[in-house]
Amino acid sequence: ESTEEVETAIGSIRYNYQPNSKLTISPRISYRYNNDDYIFVKQKPELYHNIHETNVVTGEVQGAYKTKNGIVGAGVEYRAEYINSTNLGKRNRNNLGIFAEYKHYFSDRLNAGVGLYANKNSDYDWEVFPGIDAGFYVAKNWKLFANATSGQRLPTYTDLYYKGPANIGNAQLKPEYAYYAEGGLQYSNNSIFARASYFYRRSADFIDWVRAVNTDPWQPQNFQTINTQGISLLANFHMSEAMGFSENMDMVWNANYTYLNPVIDAPTNEISKYAIEALRHQATIKLTSTLWQRVQLNIAYRYLYRINANDYTLVDARIGYMVKNILLYVDVNNLLDTQYKEVGTVPMPGRWYTFGVRFNHVWK
Image (cartoon, rainbow, N blue to C red; front, side):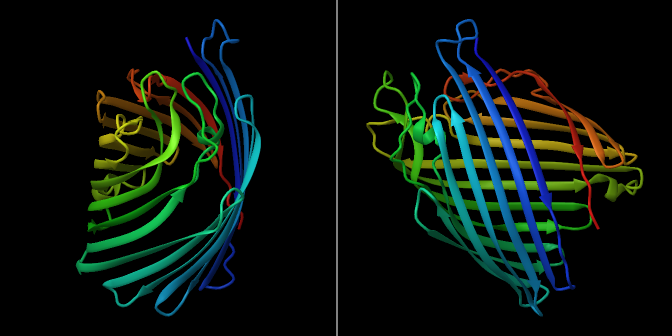
């Protein structure tokens, strides 16, 4: 029997400064602490026992300026990551990101935007990623949209340095790169938002855990390219707004479905962990409700089907109570106690609970 205990603390402070009706400046600082204590065999912890402690500090400043026919945005973000691990060692890295974007409104029906994001990590060189988007209202409430963007994913500490009997990290990994394009149609009014789109994603130097034969340990490599086509359907229904009882009750239904068809271009002599576990179908239905501006009731249903694996269903629920600006809540995750696996042979938790307190204050 394996056990895992996780402690997480998150804090964030944000301030919106608006000296006039055109300019908004928003600085933010956040901190995240996480401690993960994993024992492979509870009865014999000396066999395999990992403790990971991470600290992440992030500071950012974003600004937006309204012009006569558009909006200019720019910002900078700096993130410092520290880890102290019995398996991964003591390590740190820093990440600097700078972005600029502009959206132009040609008319009430047509708009288009361009953006640029530059990134420098202490372990890698500067990279620049452009993006573009456009929207056109073909009729009242009906909008055609399209976008294209690019980005990267940096190797995690686990990807780089992990040491275990079944998994070994690879310190020579490079970032993986993604190129994404999407187009579709959306509808919106006061109570309904719906969207249908087709998308294409190309992932180059994809980081995947692979091995040559079943007896070898898994190790991550930049060894393949993945071309993924898919369909995304989304609908939000503000039920209380549509039925006219929003004064004492706020009720919103959300539903979405995603279909994925990945085509993997990789060496045939390697066994890919991603190829045998990638998602094919995912559907979600969620109800979010607030009664009398105090009681919060949420429930979410998820259906997932993975390639070469069994499908499964997950149900999560929350009940909360708001006292002024303090929310007390209880989450029940995996309410049906579904037995399932997401990665490899590691079983995911059954039914588990979270008790929490959230404090929110807006300074004026």
